[in-house]
Image 1 (cartoon, rainbow, N blue to C red):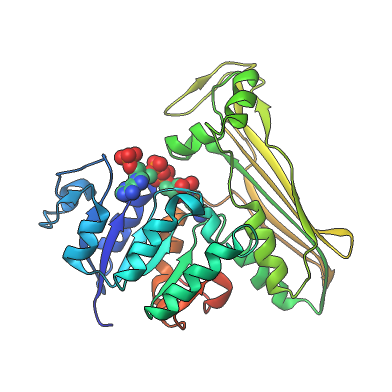
Image 2: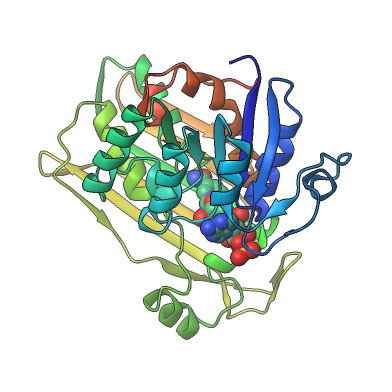
Length: 331
Ligand SMILES: NC(=O)c1ccc[n+]([C@@H]2O[C@H](COP(=O)([O-])OP(=O)(O)OC[C@H]3O[C@@H](n4cnc5c(N)ncnc54)[C@H](OP(=O)(O)O)[C@@H]3O)[C@@H](O)[C@H]2O)c1
């Protein structure tokens, strides 16, 4: 394809960032945009801060699909595969390739094997590709880890840590990690699924294990734990007094041969002073990779999504994961 016709579905902070980046690429042409409420009726170009594009944001993505017949849908509406399954099916049936930031789509074979099988079948039938990706899951705690194991003769275990200061993430992110809640509210909102915490550690573990050919017995994902502010901290959206929730930490472990061979630790809170991404591969040779400060996730998610377009289109039709793509680079 010389020029790839792109429809953006979802114009929250992430969808906007993706559409902004995509609209700057010469081989991509924005042809449509949909969101349930945000920016409906506005011109996409005006929303992105570029010149008028003559594209009205409409609430019905199905109508957009039929009207503009995109080659590719960039999709950023929800974290859960069950919530977006029909959306992806509709895109694929209209002959569009799909890249989505849905965390559970990054490696759906572990939690949702039946949905994954259906999507793969449908994508093959319609000769298009589906990919779930972003910064995490999608890159820092899985794809990059897998790539780094290429220098090892043997891998015995993997420990990955991502520690981020959530104050420079989007508001939706700060909300989902429980910023500014009391500890009691944090616990009850998590139980009531009003906040999700980070979604994706299980997908990353399953993706790593698959790439290394490890037979994963089970994944143990701990309940997210609140990180309580020890002094007042703030972000553009919240001022958090000492004693309130600043964010959370989550741990998940993948068991192979009865041992926790992959451990992922995720900490996101407002006011984190030392931000880093660390990948420790216990093997021959040992690998200890530290990125300090941690990669800014919202910008990076848009980059990973857009930079995946060309490698994805080179793969065979079907449901793909980041492991199926040739090495990514900034395009
Ligand atoms: N993999 C990764 O690394 C990664 C990184 C960042 C984000 N994410 C995920 O990507 C998703 C988007 O993030 P965000 O912060 O931008 O979320 P957000 O603020 O909730 O935005 C989602 C947008 O999608 C719209 N939407 C929902 N259903 C729709 C539908 N059927 N048709 C059209 N639009 C629809 C919503 O509409 P209204 O609100 O207007 O009703 C909202 O504007 C989230 O699930 C997030 O967790 C993943």
